[in-house]
Amino acid sequence: MRKYLAFFRLRFSMDLQYRAAAFAGILTQFVWGAMEILMFRAFYQADPSAFPMSLEATASYVWMQQAFLALFMAWMMDNDIFDSIANGNIAYELCRPINIYRMWFARSLAGRLAKALLRSLPILLTALFLPAPYGLMLPVSLDAFLLSFLTLLLGTGVTVSFCMLVYMATFFTISPMGIRIIAVSGVEFLSGAVIPLPFFPDGIRHILELLPFASMQNVPLRIYSGDLAGAAMWQAVFLQVFWLIALTLLGEFLNMLAMKRVTLQGG
Image (cartoon, rainbow, N blue to C red; front, side, top):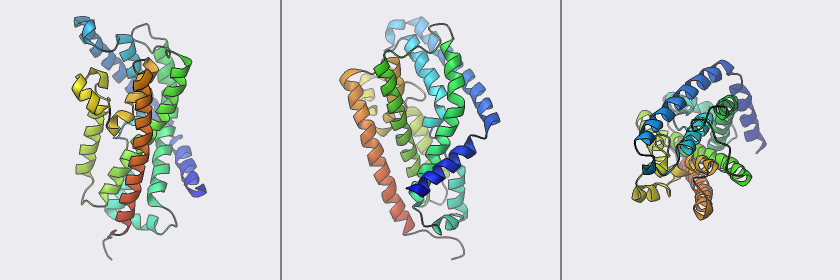
């Protein structure tokens, strides 16, 4: 465990150095969040009663999503991992007395946390001072705030576990581009990144909420805004824990299979 914590610390400290990239990301995410909220406002002005969430709750969902974008976005994968598998540099990693899956998991988690740490606070503070209903609302209760923070970490774990499946699947393909594009597109649409899940028709929403994608950003953002509460909230938390364990075990299994059939050019 100590060696994986060392990989975590190294990657975390390295990604904290990219402050200029973080500043550019803050500006981009703030502008994108504002555009999303203005788009939703146009729909709300047409018929406010047709939407399951208030405009204020939707705006808070968007700002929380932008603040913690690095934790949930599947497209923020580590290109170095894909390159090492494709060009054969994975051989250097295999010489180490480590578990590849656990090392990559630690690195991926550290990278996402470091990026979120640099970007989240400025976005949240700015959004808090925006006028209602366009700004970030305060949490509905202290319990909701604490639980949203816990589910934020669980959702990050589910996201990393899912991305690890994509890395592991790359061992069984010629190029990672196909599976990567499909995985990213699926997560973007099914996790609530494009449209919050409550906006889907009830029949489709009930199915989507059972899938691992809903356990990424959907749960913590809706708990914070008060849209998810009661028995449905605890069911969502249980599903987060379930999918985190299930996806991690599946990733470890794929890693075991991949290590039995690694083929490098030249021998």
